[in-house]
Length: 589
Ligand SMILES: Nc1ncnc2c1ncn2[C@@H]1O[C@H](COP(=O)(O)OP(=O)(O)OP(=O)(O)O)[C@@H](O)[C@H]1O
Image (cartoon, rainbow, N blue to C red; front, side, top):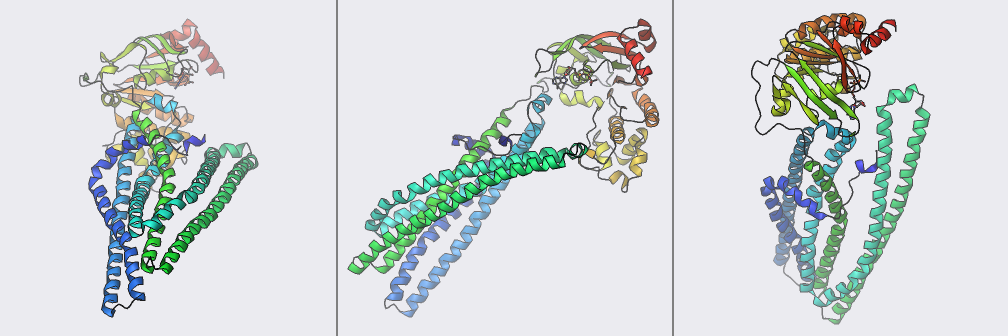
């Protein structure tokens, strides 16, 4: 895994951020509230130095007690307004960020999960998860605080600069002369720190990738006794990350010292010039105090702006990657004007002159010249050596891919003329690898048909020989099976898959090595269940074990993407071709 999977790159194209607008737009009210409270809190902050000037002037002068009271009550009033407006501003913008991101994440997920199977083969899942997580977090940070800091700093910078000029044009002029001398080194230094912190994030991402890879494969690491080697590899990556971090920390410390020296140097210079004016009687102490406070505000805002600039660039990079995902289009979609299937579905399948290669392997045809007619209710077994194209037939039936030539029809309708939910709703699949989702045993069986009630779930489990082991678990059907179902044996997972298919009760049944993980005894029991299930449905069975295909009405022998023979077990044996060879190897093995 490369670091691009975890670290959003900064982008030069700030324009990418405009694509956030559709997600922010529904929450215009919050944005407006934020702007109003930003205006109020900035004004209240900018009034404070004036209050300080009053205090200095009246405190040092001969003001009456009541005037002092009014000033302090006023000051506290301003503080109250500032407190309320700041809290309200924070509330509006943070909530806006959360809401916008919640809809961005949901929309992105809904978009990605609808993309073709081919898309998931081209893209690493780790990277997709990162886009859903890290990239959206970066954008959330920008909306929830970055934009807020940037705009607040910009408003404060403008306000403080204007008020500095208004307070004392002479000192403002002097400050303008000093600013470049202060800012230039800070910007140059800052850039270096930023580069180093990016490098250090990348190194950290490397360590995360190593940990992810090896912890996910913990049993393999143990089986090959590679704990020490893997620990060393991880420690080496950590050391590299640490070295980069040390450089960054050193640079950052130096930057801090530089900022303080330059900043206080500049303030001292301006104060010194101001103090001379106070001595000369051309400036009052109060005005000087007011001016210095504005100068501090202005400097703070400038620092704030430069700090969030990096965040803005990073968020633009993240948004660019997210937009790329949104631009991905699924090629396999329901047609605009679909043809409905006549009900009830008969289940007649026709493969006509089918030619297909996987998009990633254009020169290697996975199926060619493939012609097959399957009658309604017929059970057909596909056999052949590994790589013959058996699973590919299933993938095309499920429309994970479309063939480049020829067509497949169900009850006379081209699969491409059906809506995807109608086509896939007519199919129950028991795949080679059963996926168990986080959820209870009942939820996992209900994956076959969402609206099934408890009795139907239990019946399906009984028919799939899964009831016994589920009942033996502490919470039976409510037992959490956990991610990837690591607590279930291969055979148990397969029985859950069969229960799903039973529950689905679809007219087409696709069994891909459905009983490969079962022991002989369970297999015998499940074969009966499957036989019952196959009655009245068109069934395609992929099986390597010839014992499981003997009950098929017809056996289709495939090799190198083509059909090389078909018939019954007996007739194929008599022919003496590939099937007879496969049978000989199996029965003597
Ligand atoms: N997703 C894919 N992308 C590219 N090529 C693929 C893909 N899936 C399968 N293939 C290739 O297509 C050919 C047919 O594979 P398929 O999985 O259909 O064979 P199979 O007969 O089901 O084999 P097995 O019995 O081992 O499952 C093989 O050469 C395989 O390498």
